[in-house]
Image (cartoon, rainbow over all chains, first blue to last red; front, side, top):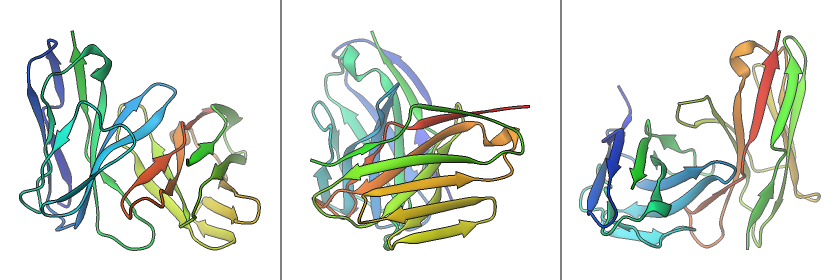
Length: 113
Length: 111
């Protein structure tokens, strides 16, 4: 089944404790992205990647890191999480093409205490 | 910068037609997309308009007017399962995969 997977789905952590949210897609898509979703703000792009080793900042990159060492994986790293990073996070991939159709993962709900 | 505006909430009854509007401001335009998101779920792609006019996909249609920087999503024969949030999105000229989403419109369909 073609899909984007994320792990963990739920995470409660404390301020300053480094964490990684994994994202993997099995559709051989060139492009991948991370978004955060907060009430009333919609989806905001954190980072995106155009290919292996090619990443760029989205609208809200502060406090986050990403890497794209393999085409299928795009982990999101929070080196020192803070409470304002409590949010719902979505990973997405897309094959390219004019519509930029995003295929979203199921989401990771992160709480930073 | 780029921005999109859409109503925060819309209410309608089963069987009716509802229109969700989206106005955008971008320094370059590459098309308008729509996504649906049910509570607790992930967004899913609905439609994409690059050119002016109406695109129809079953009960859903999407319209674009580039001269007015405006688009809408039209949902016909509403069903309870259409209750969800709907987001419009545009590509940011700063990068091919850089997307800007509207804040979303929550649609409530009542019997």
